[in-house]
Length: 590
Image (cartoon, rainbow, N blue to C red; front, side, top):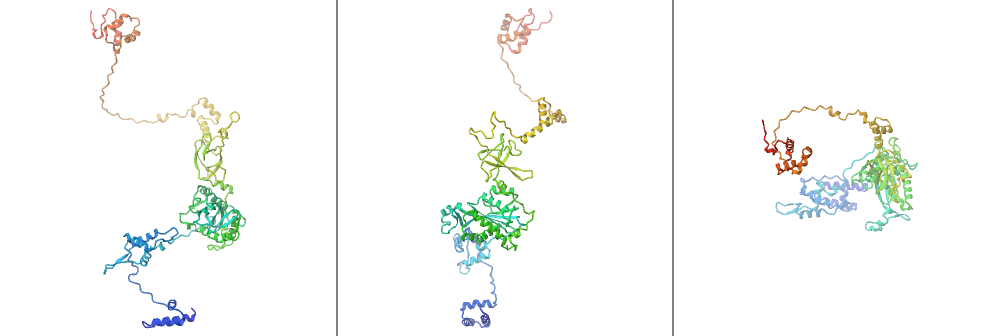
């Protein structure tokens, strides 16, 4: 509207405001005809140039015939119908209809005058849901976020992997993925190029916003992730100052990110690994936004010049990220990304070891293995020689693991250093000969081998010298051969017993126990058995008459307890009449 038309609109609005009731329509029609616009357009334009009175608020504003409990049920049904892409499948009308048919809600009111049920309209239900803050559009908004800050360059890095949806690397170079050929409806085509698809790894420095970009083939694996992180930490190009070991690393909970190899690499490099919760990708929103930047700024150029190999793509990616980090102004710092990263101090910049050393540190999760008496351990179906491991002892357990970059015939032993940091020792697999003998075995009659003394052996020698009071092993062996008393006899093994004063105990009165002692009865000896026992006692007096006397006086046998009395009886003078013991009388006087 030009100024003349605006002035004319103001006059029409003033005339309509002062016109009597019923004459405003004629004024509006005349004004629309004069301006050459429709009546509806005139009404809309008048609202832009005039101030109208606000409508009076209804007395029942903010009140709803839909109770809160019913609104919650309706909202819950609507949320259950929402897909992962936030598409709502069920309408408010259908949700109300289903709940009402199941007698779970009323969603209406009964007219007190007529008794007729009046259901609420869909608009009334929708307004009620909004007033209760239960409408799906309100509930699906993101939860409030908290801004994150880092202290200095290399304080926090963020890493993320994403598969390229535009290109794959065929045998004849990079090719565009035609949407008509490669989509979810044709999984066979996607399967065919699965190992040729480009994976994009992006690392960002949180403070400066510096972007590191590298492409790999195949899949998001622990080896690829470790390789990219190791390459990012190295000093690469004179025009690329970005390097060093980050103090913290933020990533998502993917399988490669949580693998033992990646975790061990971070632990060995003293990197504090921060893994965000599932579904909370915005926690590392900087690297997520960097993916968009790479797609727009770099990958869009691949359509005009196809790369012939992965090396060429990464070479182009290196050129682009050096250009972008050196020239693009960051919206937060108002400076280039490399310019801000250059503010890092020597204390903040931790230099990474060489690539080979970093790869040695990226090992899988260690497993416990017991050391045999041959100083070997069993691991992954083979035997490994651990005799070269410092301070190894028979019977102890070692943490051993494989290294994904080394040959399968070697393993890695994880040791704990004096500084509390992990150390790594490579051990080799023991090869078996034609007859199953280990390659490290000594040939009988040709070789003599022995292992270096273990800490246990050294300790036993020291203790042997301590016990024998000597200063060398030869003297200790001589003292043992001479049966020298240990510790020079200074230790009284019973001193703790003799020096202990025992308490005096008061006697306790007891009750006699009536015990029925068993009666032991011996079988009677035969005359022959009794003669064998009596004859050695009286060799000079034994005769056939003596044996006859026994048979006469003890016809049933002889009790063993009567042998002493019979011996005395037989040794009496001959003039004394011999009678059985039970009948002998004591004769007194003449």
